Length: 116
Length: 114
Image (tube, each protein chain N blue to C red):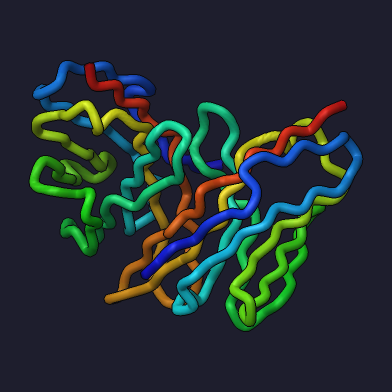
């Protein structure tokens, strides 16, 4: 069964450093998402991406964040200068379509980011 | 504003019992509500969804009930098994500007005891 994959599973970085979290969405999916989950809290929407453009972003997704689809398979989230409060689990998701009818978003296993 | 929340943060049940997990939401604009299961160290996994014009939908061992009058969503799990132990999130599929985003509730931990 196709699945979303993410690497690395755990990333430890120093405050102020740049990190890139990588995702490989399901191959025939066209819509991509990043969510984050601070330990013990709910999953929060960060950004959605379609046709090589950001379609929507949340207030969390400030200028320190960027997303990219560098090739036909990868979807990346970059945090330019990490802060302690960026420590969280980051989930990538993808869906085949979008629209008024529900289109299931399939989630990856997540990358745990720890900022020291 | 938009918010989806949960009444019970932790639910402990005996194996074989039925479980009911509840969720209250405040945004009536969404067309779909979804339940996700998250096991330790894994991403959210889709369980079941319900469209806003329905009040009940059944899956395999799970039933979702939607009461739009009181903005309440529940997930019923029949004959709960140890493998059902996880955190359960309700979520709202919010469609705007041609795109979707999920708005999650705070989560309920289900602990199944043998």
